[in-house]
Image (cartoon, rainbow, N blue to C red; front, top):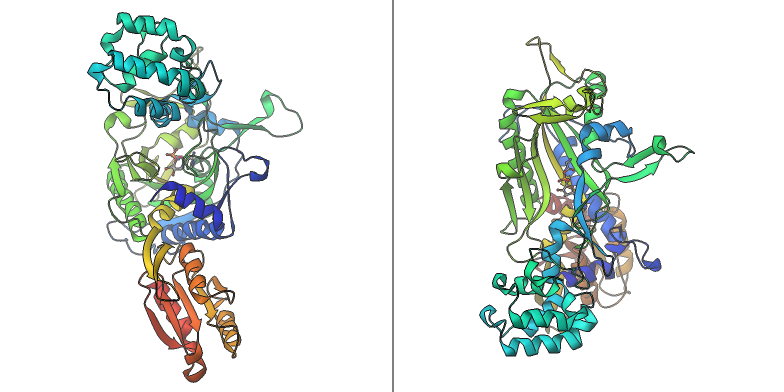
Length: 564
Ligand code: GAP
C-alpha cells in the first residue's frame, strides 16, 4: 500500500484533516473527522478497558507474577514548572537542530540523512547519475552529466548547493581531484559538491530543501511554553506537558492516601501531550499535539525485572490481539547504550509503517523499567547518575540544582513493616500512532463482483470489529414495498447498543462499497424475501459471505459476532 492512498482515503471519508486547513494548515497538528474520532475513541476505549476497567484484580492475568490493581487519573495539562525541572525535561528534553544558511529551514540533526536521501534534488541527481559507478565519478561523462544537471534541474531545485552557486570553482577542484579521495558513493559525492572547501568536505550534509549549507547542530528544547496569569514574565512561565507520566508520579501519594491500593499496582492515564517537534512529518506519526496512553506500574524493587518482562509481553500482545499480527510488528529490546541513564531495561513495540524505508520500523510504544528515578526525583530533586548511584544534581554552590517537593514518596508495607521507594515499569503508548498503525494494517484491496456480477477493484479497511467506527450498516434493498420501514426498525433497535448507520440512497452495491471503505464489519439488508419470511441478510466485510437471520435476531447476532 502506498501511503498516499491511505492519506487520500482518510481525507475523503472524514478520518483525518489537516488542522486549520482553510488557512493553509498548521504543521504538526491534525483534526480527526467524524469517522476518525470514532476510531481513535475506540482505540482509547480498548486500551482503557483492557488495561484498567476490565482488569480482574483478584487473579494474576496470564504471565503476571501476581494479582495486581489498576486505577486511573486525569491530570491537568499545565503543571507546576518545578515538575519539569525535577523530571529532567527542563534541562534534557532536547533535540539537535540545524538551520540552512541559504533557505533558513530547520532540520533535526538525527533525521537529516534520511530527509536528504528522500529529497527531490538528491533523487534527481541520483537518477541523472544512475548509470555511473562511483569509480567513474571523475570521468568526462560524469562531468557532462553534472554540468547539464547543474544548469537545468539543479538551478531550479537545489539553488543553495555550492556546485550550483559556484560552478566554475567547484569544477576546478573536481578536475584537479582536490579532496576526491573520500568520495566512494553518491552520498559522498553530494557532500563533496556541497562543500565550500573541497579538501575539507568532512561529513557535513547539505540542506534537503535547497542543497545549501547548514549551521552546526544546536540544542532545542521541545517543551511548549505558555504563561499562566495576567503577567507574562519568567515567573509566570509554564509548559504544556510533553508527557502524561509526570502527572501520575506527582499524584502517587494522593492515590495511595485516597484509595486502598497496595503494591503492586498501576496508575493509568490517557491525555494530550505537546512537543514542539522540529520536523513534524509522516502524517500523524510525529505531531506537535498528540495523545498518550501511559501506565506507571509500582512494585517492590526485587520483583521489578519480572514485572518488566510481564508488561513488555502484555503490551505487545495487545496490538497483536487488535489486528497488528504479522511481520510488520516487532518487539525490540534496547541495547545497553540506548538506555536512558536511569533505565535498567527498555523495549520498544515497533511497526513497519509504509512511509518508512524498507526494513525500518517506527515506535508505537516504549516499555521502560525506570527504577526509583521518578519518585525520588520528585521527593529529593533532580537526579544524575554518579557511577552506579543516582544522586541529587548540585549547582555551583553545592546546593540541589532543582529542589524536589520534600514530600515522602516512599511506600510503607504494613504486612512486612518495611518502607521503600517502589520501582516503576512504564508502558507508554501513543493513541495517534496506534490509530495510524491500525489504519495502515487495515488498508486492503481485492476484487469483488459489482451489482452486474463484473469483478471490480474493492478498497476496504479490515479493522478489528472493536475498533471499527461503525459496527453495522442497515439498508433496504430498494426504497419501496415497505422495506425502508423494516430497515428503520432494525436500525432503531440496534442503535442504543452499537454505532450503526442507516442508508437507503443509491444502488446497494455502492452502499456496500462505501461501508467497506470505512471498515464497517457487517451490512444488514432488507430485501424481498424479508417481506415473505422476515429474514434479512448479514454480509461480512472480509469474506463477503451473506447469511440470513430473522430480523428480530439482528441484535443477538451482532452481539455475538462483534464479541467473537
Ligand atoms: N513517558 C515516556 C514517554 O513519553 P516517549 O517514547 O517519548 O516516552 C511515548 O513517548 C509514546 O508517545 C511514543 O511511543 C509514541 O507512541 C508517542 N509519541 C511520542 N512523541 C510523539 C509525537 N511527536 N507524535 C505522536 N506520538 C508521539
